[in-house]
Image (cartoon, rainbow, N blue to C red; front, side):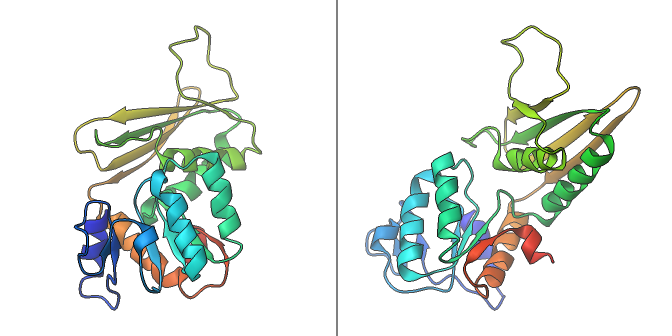
Length: 236
């Protein structure tokens, strides 16, 4: 994703002022192995890294009052709470998925839940490449949370059924993960009713869509005051 973000800013009015990557050579110009070594002040941080880096990144952002676009998934509950707390002091744009299309299907799923939820079973299937560590994906959880919000929190998330032999309960919301090959990202939400089935699906064919979304989010959040922002705020 770092390379994709670099490509997304080429030829635009934005530029990469510095990068943080544990793999860079010590002393490489404008490149740092960790946030504890970063020098200077920048307009915004775009973070597509790993939960193990999140805390140090937030430490630096707070210390320097730097706006953040946080795209890292797999954060712990404690880290999610900290993100909310940091958003009270600096601008934080937080989204599990930076694609415009994915955020559109979030809205469509909420509407479908309002119309179909009482009579239809809802299942989410997500597919990603074989190098992705966290499962289910942050986007799958984002979709599930949006659906549950529209349903007044009545659903319980179910991640596996093979361990229990019983019929599906109405309050279940199934979430299933597939890992293989170089699948960039696919998410499908199935509303299964009596004699009919409605499917809402999004497929990403490259990482470019996420990088472009992140750069646009950086432009947006850099002009905001302290707060926790999402794609919905940027699209208003």
